[in-house]
Image 1 (cartoon, each protein chain N blue to C red):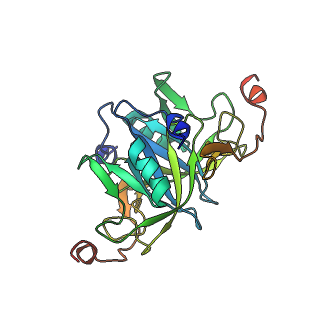
Image 2 (image 1 turned 90 degrees about the vertical axis):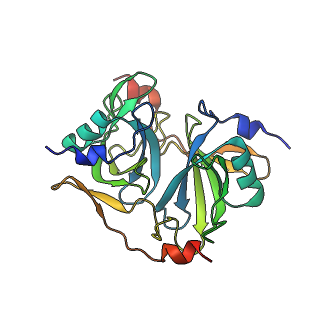
Length: 131
Length: 131
């Protein structure tokens, strides 16, 4: 199988690129994680988002613990070839480990200059991770 | 003025975070660039997207040459506090230096395993940069 599409990517000095997961229907940005070549190739092959966990230094099949799998609908690459965009169907509606839809649940309040939590918790994280 | 909101961010070892520019109306992801604390603070103050150009090692007021300014509607921060999401109004409709709407104009063709250009050039880059 050709790996030209993987070689087209400009991996950073750690061999990673940021990957944005976006809801394929609503275009909501759900999260950003990192991928190495192996995780990107596996994502394509398995049809689901598979990231490289920088904290755990291992492959992270999104949803492997929480059940919040991201089914891959489309992959895009930017002009500099150093960011990947995944259009996904978010199983279980929740992408964030806090139980929220999106990881971007805090908004800068322009008056108070504080990051205000605006999005509700949809699932109890304890239920997501202690099955 | 409080800088707590800037200190809340987990800057990487180069003092940067990735910033996603998303169309505030359609939710399209337009581009990803990088910000340091100064560029983020200036973005807030000036109400437009100001990035840190890693290649030029200087502030980059998006649109300063091309006219494709991004007016800032909202700023969001993710759960790990290491990615910023900018909701913007893209002046001139074009975010990409190639003259396309979005930098993510290439889609992986699952059969041929090639990155196919799917989005049209809306503006001649020569016209954008040689004014």
